[in-house]
Length: 253
Ligand code: NAP
Image (cartoon, rainbow, N blue to C red; front, top):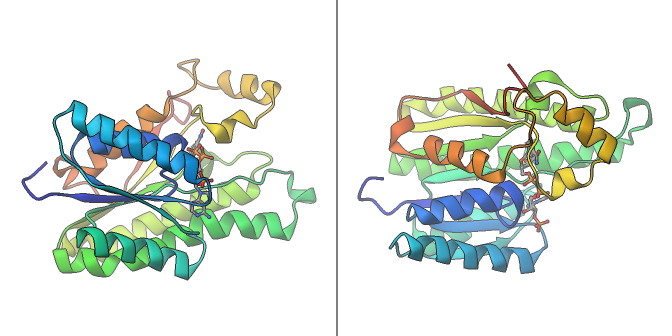
């Protein structure tokens, strides 16, 4: 990291992959805004883990957690305002908040389709639009969208989710082109099968079937995604933009 004290805003930072990203960034000395939907106990736990990670590495950081629904314009505004009020800058935005409402196409309700698009895709658009101005003023920014392997390859039972994750890739590439001249990069990570609350909901049969498609024959850890996010947030990735980085044990190759 350069000498500038960097601030990262992570949506869905209270659990799973978002938590792992927050804790890794804390260890590198980033000030943090942890967004979450409703589980304040998990957000508090993550805050503590972040302080521990920072102090283990001899870093001093500030961390705030903010409850806000990224699917609404008010929620996105509230997150960015909280970050700007507390830290005066946002260097890294990680659009990680995501939900599933799985079901076969023929039986999927319009509501389940809309809810997933609203959180996973529209939420990322609203957040990106809000941070664009402060990042352009700073002439620095890193936007990281957490897509999915199913956004690249599709998955039976997930037309809503895979459409949202494919949409995120288009959002990533277009944002990259629009903001590149302002020294703002925008990249996506496409995780494969990662052990979190989201994947706990799968049946044992579905888990086994998925594991069988992974060349490395094991699920990934949230920290595997965090390592990729740390790289894309760092100065070391400054000439990389508009890319999709698969972190999937070979599943997508
Ligand atoms: P998770 O454990 O279910 O955590 C989801 C996080 O998103 C929580 O912090 C939750 O907040 C937050 N959230 C949900 N809806 C929100 C909303 N409307 N507004 C604000 N925050 C919201 O999920 P995960 O497995 O870590 O997944 C994180 C991201 O990775 C998601 O985008 C997911 O699609 C993607 N991904 C996951 C996998 C995987 O195998 N796990 C694979 C590919 C991609 P609360 O704690 O308050 O509910």
